[in-house]
Length: 332
Length: 241
Image 1: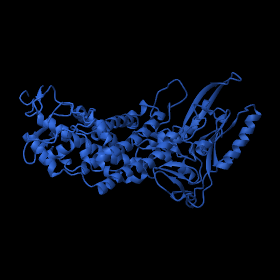
Image 2 (image 1 turned 120 degrees about the horizontal axis):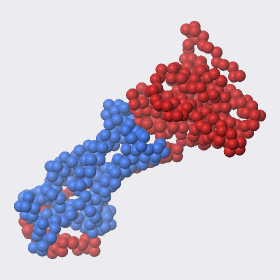
Image 3 (image 1 turned 180 degrees about the horizontal axis):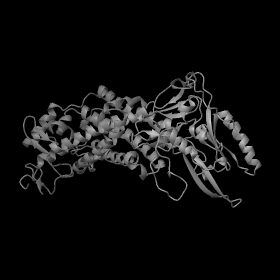
Image 4 (image 1 turned 90 degrees about the vertical axis):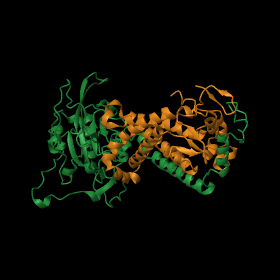
């Protein structure tokens, strides 16, 4: 058993903030000077093989974050609600999977939610300064007072996690209980888990614990057991132990090789810089042309010709060059 | 309808590039009516929308310009209002399109005009062919705007999450947001060309403010159009309408 995180001291001086504004390593649409010293990276490890699907984590998440989910419908499946919502930061996803080798039906239960990517697509897509921040301990958090509700984070996220609230038009997702972690607690979901399918600690502790679990699983015949810590997004601060780590997608569509979409990279990268440059060059070319060539002015002669034309007096005829055909067949 | 050219040769129809309301008013100098009051109001609604869209769009395009959101009452308001201005632009431009598309259909002299466009920029306008109400450059702006506005409204609806989130997949939205950004950059460049041409070619802006230009301006820049207008005096439609 992984040693549980002890309950906090109730003495007032124990409630010191362990991290805050000074520990930001990334801030959306802004540049920050990263702190000289990085906090120890934290992680949540979700051991899918130990999950019994009780949804205590889902309930604890609603409770701690003071969220009320709409009363929905029974769709004949265990998922409830059917998808993540602005109020459901974490969701148990249930998959019935027939193992082709054993022909056994396996009930795969995955706790879905923000993965807290080391390379967060949401943050990179966000146009609002400070609406998404990343602390040096790895937690990616949304700052609602800065959020403009554009939904760019949804396009940036490789895991389809953020949801925009219809109430306040800002984006919501799992905070990894940054408020609890800040005072030395583990996330609410972890606290509520009755089987230690969710554990929380430093990233290294979690990797070590995962190794131990994977060895155990392998000894029980799960040859492909492994850790899901996808390197395409620089690793994550929420990791899974999977019995079939070779095929993550069987777990309700967990991406096999998540990374920030090249479309998002192109949009936020080359398009932005080339776009600004092209617009700048266009404007500068105009100014330069005006300075060099001078304005194109109507001459006195032009006005006189126009007067002669309207008065029916002789004016220069239409030129009869090769390209300037006179379709109406007018002659002077 | 029938008209008569200046030398008496019959012309069986109004040329494409002569629009309703175009007329010559003899005098010293000659005045030429170029845009009706309806066309001007229509143009300026479109222009205002386009400028507001560019400002609010650029604010969300790059963090360096995020401060522009303060013009619209903050980030949330910018996000809310931008698509609605886009709707206004779309319908306003649709009316402009109906007004102007006939005069912007390709003409034979367009090829020659494009071939000599370097001469125009170098200040040798006398080498240019005589053109109708719009030269090939203006036609290019018109058609570029038309195509880009369709691309922008279509891609914009795909990323208008407040109302249309469920209609498309996230991957489709990623494509749309990239297309929207690229099309916006291009349309801003087209707008720069349009505005610069109006500033560079003196006497042009009056066409969209007062509705008329001088005869000399028309002679210099749109001589074919001027000849057509003079040739069809009195306007053949006037008595019938």
